[in-house]
Length: 122
Image 1 (cartoon, rainbow, N blue to C red):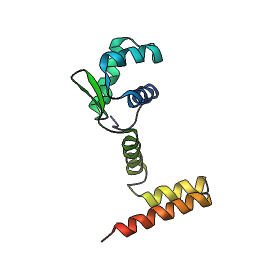
Image 2: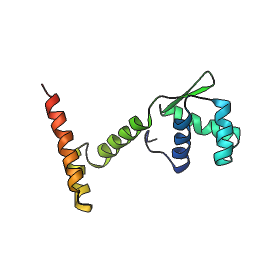
Image 3: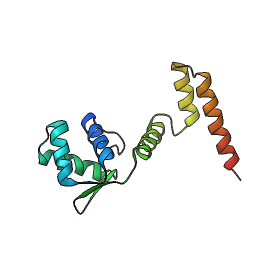
């Protein structure tokens, strides 16, 4: 199982949790019924999947996020680059920029990011 790859409904469910976390599991059942027309068992099955991946946890009947949305997206990006580009960010950027040219604002932002990382090095 790919830890950071989610199906369409898993993604929607995760977004719902991030919007309301921490949330009582009973309240989450109600929210899922309204949003997705899910039964209680469906919600708990989906929650179990996401908890097994370390994204959320059900702690004493309260669902909490173990990873923020931003942390999850970052981990998903790292996993993608590791799987598809041998862990090389330059290879990814080369492939990306061949398909879509970077705008001047994007280039400035990337340069700024690189400069900030260079300043952090001892």
